[in-house]
Length: 251
Ligand code: ADP
Ligand code: MG
Ligand code: MG
Image (cartoon, rainbow, N blue to C red):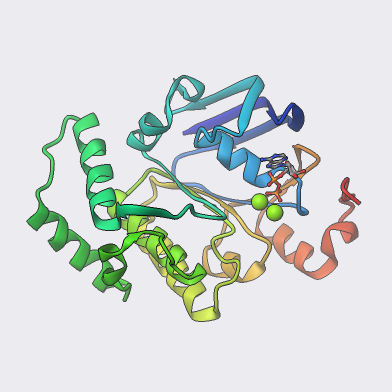
């Protein structure tokens, strides 16, 4: 599904990713871990075409297409979903309108029939009820004044309704209480169908206990320096980065 080779990315003229390789196949769950500032967010931001990130080398192939040729909206329409570490607040843009528009753009892109307001509401009601999510968030402006937890729940509603093929989560568990982390895991696990792939960034074992990754990667100084299975996350949890031989380049 996704193949990244020798990826080099600059932010503000500074090289952050320094030749990163990563392969994610259909249906696989990958966890990405690493010390603060290692470049984890830079990787997922690059994948979602964030304007901060300037690709200076390497290739990214997604569903056999050159991802770097696709614009932000095309990437979303091709089934890439990204939950940002700090979702932006967009006052003046109704959340429900925003989501329905995104769904219909994706449908139009795929040559499918668009959904009307009634169908949209029915769909929202069904999906939010399954996971006990508060659909009232949709009546407000996008992320405007949302608490940290509300932003994350809103992302889950978007995720459910957009039904992407590649789900990228950047520290979706940070600042969430145990129950909210369980909700995140229920949503993700409920969506997984053996075809969707996940790339999740986390610092904590708790989320990985609930969404068991097939692979755990450690990113350090702009490269993936270690790959293992779930046991690598357990080892990291026990010993810390230094304990498994990862040097924090920022220290
Ligand atoms: P991580 O997510 O692993 O904590 P990031 O990818 O956010 O790390 O950041 C990697 C490096 O890029 C850090 O040194 C950070 O300070 C730098 N960086 C990220 N965004 C910007 C920016 N907008 N301007 C300047 N430097 C940035
Ligand atoms: Mg960070
Ligand atoms: Mg980050």
